[in-house]
Length: 115
Ligand SMILES: [Zn+2]
Image: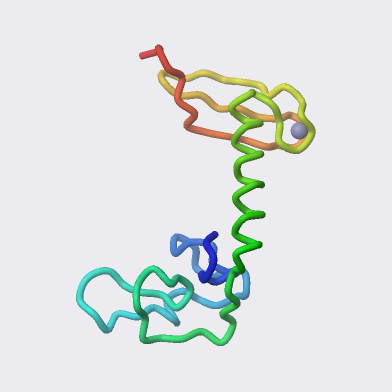
């Protein structure tokens, strides 16, 4: 979530944003190369979206703080919701961490030093 982007954007791997807009309906395919979307300020875009609402700098900072808090908790093997110890299931070089109470799951955390 970055300032200037739309707060409803969830990623184009999804069909719709949180405002219910289909990404295909606002996709800009007028230029060669990758598509553009009015949701993101990354690339110039010729299409618009009536539901666009810009993320503010304060919202970007709050989102970043929350992301940092969650990452720090997971790295310490704690549930970001309740601070309980996460259950860790190792599989090859990766693992899955989960909280039995909240269902919080973190995947693909690399286990260094294992094959
Ligand atoms: Zn929990």
